[in-house]
Length: 493
Image (cartoon, rainbow, N blue to C red; front, side, top):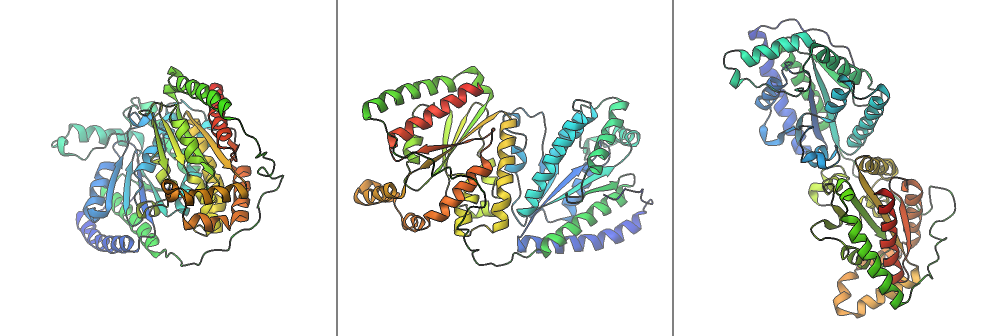
């Protein structure tokens, strides 16, 4: 980031001339951006109270067509939002491609505040900063351009201007944005500016750059912010999505080591009477665990993946029978909608994160990016390769926010799958379960097997482990799923 310098005071006549030219260019760029729809623009508007965030916000809404602009404001002390991971609120509101979001109270707000008040040390601060940089890199790769602006004003000058606006004539009509109400002393205000500069200066060469805009002259400040927005819109509109054919499938693993799937003993089974006893006991125990007071402070996210016809639906039904239906929700994941395709691929899963104390069960999941999208060519090689780290970051953030993530892969062999496919075609009320896609996927068994092996190696972590379930015998699989979950909850609670 280039260090900011003070602007020369600008007279009203010069401002009007430059404003007229800028507004015309902004609208042209905004219309191109909205029409092409290759990127969304997210403007992070930051600065000390008194630097003019409210004035800049009002100005941008005057200069831009409001139909594609949204103001996104966040209070880090909001009790409703605090029941989910901190990133949830930003993912929930991500604008779709072709639209603009102006953010007050961004993900940098809390880390600057904690650093200014001395509640986190430098090591923790840098870890949080690095996590933000990785998230922004993922957003950029997924079609979200982030423009980070800091309205730079000394702590003394910002405090003076803030007081004058509150007390001056017509103060009730002043567009005054108050974000740092926790900062009260002169020392804290100074440390706030220092912490913000520390964030700005910690931006690396590969990160989204910060733009420090001198805020002493409101006219020059507004024009500079407008110029930055114009440049971002023009750059976004210049991006063209290249049409490409489906990339060739990857027939072999990209990881090394023994096969996890080949090591499974798919002959394991249990008799009907044993199944009934163990299932009943496990369901009762699971219910008690999810009703404990300790669970109310946690969230639970369960992922079910597996071969077609491996019995995911049956396992989920037996699991759900042990849960309070008011406490849990099942999300069957199909192909993404147009709205989801206009945003990063993790967006639709972030929106389904439950409150703490509740349970989300995913029948298929975010792993589609490294499974079906990889095999079928819906994602380019670079996209599914980087998805492993993006998924790990996602699950690590969930775990760090008190969520328990447990993932199951239900495995059957090809002979068992064929028998289940043929049986489904013969039973009228099960015919809906078998489609042409199922038969087509079966012909790609080696491709999916390679993708599964890579997925297990790259995304089974202590925070979010994979459990491979031998599912040739449905009864055995259902009991193993619930008993595995019980063991995880006992360890966590």
